[in-house]
Length: 389
Image (cartoon, rainbow, N blue to C red; front, side, top):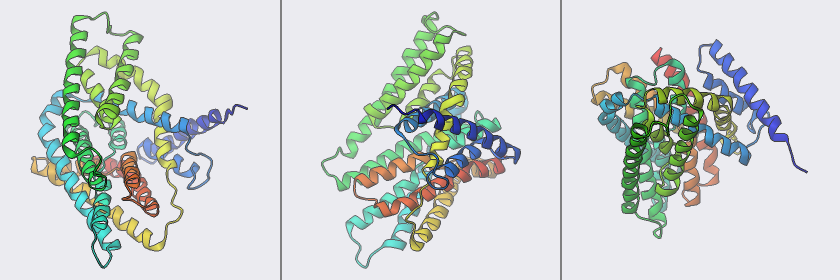
């Protein structure tokens, strides 16, 4: 018999995320904090009412893709060009410092009497996990505060995209060492180069279509929004499947390609905001909270988790903040950029899963990783709002 439980689950998620979001707003916190709290309270870690299903996971993935597409549409392209160099420096230092921090923490807790190559690789992989940045939480917080289009918001977005590319390179190097039959670093770099060529080609084609064939992309028509969402999904698919770059990166570039289209952009933003926030985005934020399952956490692993959490927070704030400071940002701007890069979210979980498949992360280590991910996700919007207030 066909089950209709998913309808009940959707009703609970949509109602509870809105109610808790409003409660968060009442205590001067971003609404996203309330949505994340719902997933934690109703998920397997607490009341055990909500569970991850294939339907919820795919809906959550659509939610984060649409969220990053909106972030691309909301980006001021001229501001992005100004902060491009700064974003690269912020991302580079924001990868190096967490990588070293995570590696050192693992070695301090789990180093055996004799250092083996596999132990060193495992330590490095914990560092790789800490390099991940899930900017979707910061994007939502900045949107609520009206700061997404400014210098800080644009720097965070640009740095997060570059961070994603650098993280893929480091991840490939580490996993490639354990599996020599896999594609080497040269092949990965080639795919990333082809990805940017593909982005440039798509940007040229779309701009020519808008310019030369206005009837195909009319302003104020529903088909324009449909074309745009389809373009977003195609870019996300090609990014992940053809080039090995995260689907959210492709979605962000899809929005970036359309961000200079004037009234077309404004119309698409209004339509997509309704689609995303009525359904998909609440599921995404709730699903992150639902991943909080900390069973099997021993006292030694808990201590490791706490130290790793502190390193995860401080390494991004110090690394990205230092990069911003080197580029001439004021102290408060550099601190805001650093805080905005703290959240790990689903990106770190995906990296951890790949480490498990390569034999570099044991199942016992997963509760510690999940603990770090959830706390950074919860703290980032709170700290970001307090800092930028």
